[in-house]
Amino acid sequence: MKNKIIASGLAGLALFGGTIAFALSGSSPASATSTAQSALTQDAPASGLRGWLHQHRKEIRKEAVESAAKTIGIPADELRADFKAGQSVAEVATAKGVDPQTVVDTWVKGADARIDQAVTDGKLTQEQADKAKAKVPTIATKLVNRHKGDQRAAKGN
Image 1 (cartoon, rainbow, N blue to C red):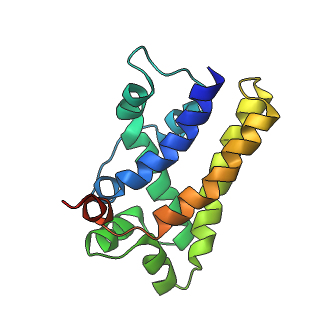
Image 2 (image 1 turned 45 degrees about the vertical axis):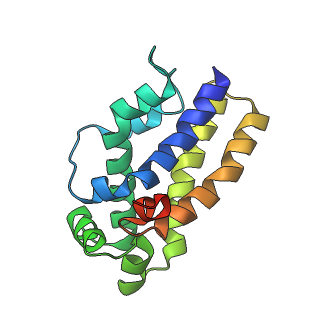
């Protein structure tokens, strides 16, 4: 169960990056905060972790886009439009006078808070939390620098 919790948190962050183009193109699900928090505090459904992530991907994406837009100081719709036009989140941030590392730090802070809560709730040991937290900055940095279509280009599509 604890491995599922760690995997849920990291996969949620990775899922955001793997599908950021969809999120930035205008998805609008409800209740992002409670669902994203549940990524580290609930078991995956019977269909497994991938099934859980599939069910909650829109909420995870929405929360990440909204937090990035808020950090940059623009509406989420503007960030989506800029991304669709070919800019990375880092390029949008830089154009608005915000260091892209600030967006990374915001995402890391959010993920760390959920991991810490999982430790407090007894769902993770401190050692497991430390391992999970060590991976988050690298994932967040890659996502901030990703452009629309990068994932498809890497796969050769």
